[in-house]
Structure formats: C-alpha cells, structure tokens
Image (cartoon, rainbow, N blue to C red):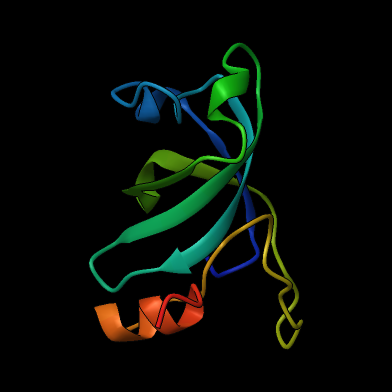
Length: 98
C-alpha cells in the first residue's frame, strides 16, 4: 500500500490513536512492515506540536496518501531517524555506542 518516503495524513479511521488521528495533517512513512503496519514520523499536526518529529508505529489502513514517492527515488532520512537495524548490536553500532 504505502512505501518509504510517502507522505500521509490521519483520517477518522485513525481516531483511536491519540496523536496520529485526523488532526495529524502530514507524516512521512519511514518503514513498511509485512504485518500491515507502518512506521511514520509526524511532520505537521493541527493541535499537538509535541507530536511533530515523533515516530509512531500504526496500521497503514487507517491513513490516506497525500503524495507518493516516485519509484527509484533515493530517500533521505528525516530528522534523527535511525536505519532499521536487525538486532541490538547493529543499533549500538549505528548510534556510535559500541
């Protein structure tokens, strides 16, 4: 459904979430999981500025696409996002703590 780099927005279907509901006006998909969930970073929110730059794992079906990243586009990480390490050792290496 979505791919990394897509811009999405919250919908009424997402109203069971506190921050990533229909007041979230823009977020970027930073990871797509095989179980139908996506990881997003909030870019704009109507009422909760504390949610901006936060990362959430949510059900993809609760959100609408704003704009899609063209196939083959190299994605630049947003903010302080960390690549998806497959284990704790890799995470420590990425964070420079090992």
